[in-house]
Length: 107
Image (tube, rainbow, N blue to C red; front, side, top):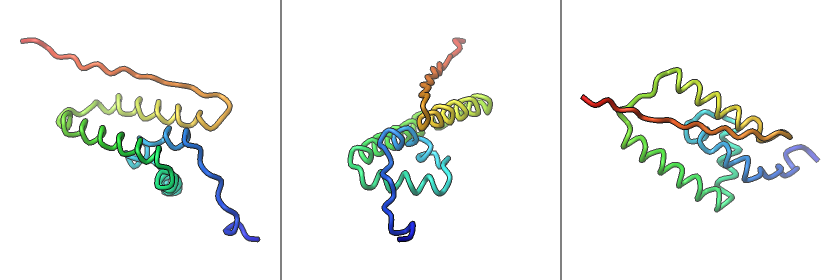
């Protein structure tokens, strides 16, 4: 029996949902992208969540498309997301929350 004959272990929904934004932002490796897409296509609840998150991303891009975040903020956010996702598969689970405030100046 070859490894091709053995069915792949089903990805837990928690793992797929933890990486949806990495998938939406095209920040996954090609292999992980394929794994996530296979799971989402076969799992109606995850497909629904993916669709909702995709709509939120498009809405934010439409409403906030002209505002670019500083490169340092983008780097910190990406590092934080990756750290959170990386710890999901291990024994320790770390939850990271970031609050971003938009400040306006009055003339």
